[in-house]
Amino acid sequence: MDAHTRLPVTRVDTLVQAIARTIDSGACPPGSRLPSIRQQARQSGVSPFTVVEAYERLVALGLVLSRRGSGFFVQTKIPHTPPLNADPTDLPLDEHWLLRNVYNQPDNCLPAGCGWLPGQWYDLGTQHRVMRTLARDAMIQAEYGDPSGYRPLRRHLALSLCERDIPATEKEILLTQGASSALNSVTATLARPGETLFVDDPGYCNLLSSLTFHGFNVVGVPWTPHGPDTKALEALLKQHRPKAYFTNPWLQNPTGASFSTNTAHQVLKLAEQYDFQLVEDNVSGELLDPPPPALAAMDGLSRVIYIGSFSKSLSPGLRVGFIAAKHELIEKLVRYKMMSGLTTPELNERITLGMLQESHYRKQMDRLRDHLAKAQYHAARGFDRLGWRLFTRPQNGLFLLAHPPGNVDSLELARQARQENILLAPGKLFRPYGIDTPWLRFNVAYCNDNTLWSFLERATT
Image (cartoon, rainbow, N blue to C red; front, side, top):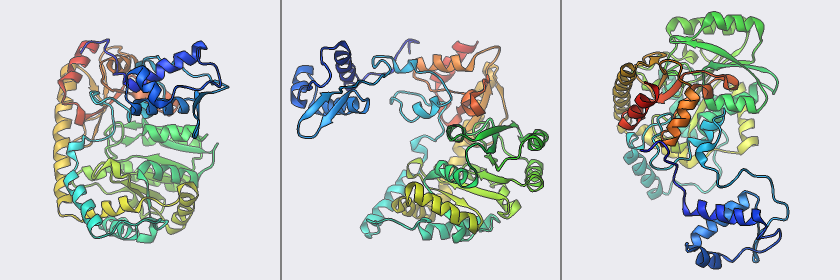
């Protein structure tokens, strides 16, 4: 693919740009009525559906006003907006870039820096079968669910956690809309804007952006291939008094590293000594076989709040996650959940339970582990061949953190890749306050494409 190839522009994009230019030129003065949908469709040679979508997008941009029964009119006060004919690849690579772009990409984009698995790796057959069963047995409810989440799923999770020595009852589990919602709920319940929270450095970009946006004092704890640097952590604890430390201990995003046993014990000891909560974001630990002892198991949920999700194992589209914590904290989290968004979708929670109870679930996890172990091996070999340095070499999981040779600028490399419809994730997106770094995160599930390796070889050697 030519290095100057641009992302595809749809008919809706073209029509939006044309109308915006007409408004900007003064040919359609403020308050004037736009042609009807049918008139615009005839004039532009497009379908009425294209016009409807274009008009709605212009309304969303603040350029056009919709008056029910009367049509669409040019706004009397036109807001300042970026040029609509700007190429989407010209958007700046700031700390929120990955969140804006990774979920909105053309079909021919290679998402080598994304955070999910290919769709065909999930057990969609089981999901469809469970959904048909729910529909056939009239199990789909047209009402709000339990504030804490679907009780049978919480009961199932309590049994599963107890098998892993995490002492949680169904009353100590809260279902959430994915792990990101769980992290947000815990944050809002534990601390107030301006207070200090510790995070992994590098760490989960969504969490970093959220904490910064809400005005928390975010302090990064440096990571090693064996987890956080415990000496650096203790030095930071002497300087700051955090409410909590949010950490992703197993197959960490973005490094792929995991806590060693010694690191886990040291971190728990420091939590006791310096009196802070540990928030264990364990969304990938199940991909390790056998799963390692969770921090929550070592601690007994005394100082650890445990967060899990089914986005990696079942389906990211279900958006089902959970929090396990002491009952007193769960009660506060339920109140926050109801204030901020009411109940979570019970239908999704029923589907999740149905899939977990299927005999195929264990086989599906074995397949995922096998796919990822092979992908990790081949991706590491590819980077070795190009002379890249790896942060660590995980046996499993989605991520590798890699350092290009020489003085390659990771941001500039990501910009170049974007011109060729390859989505890379520069390391600054995973650092508190977007601190510069030459590292990049790669999703090994998408590193089996020769397009990626051809680009990296041309751009870095």
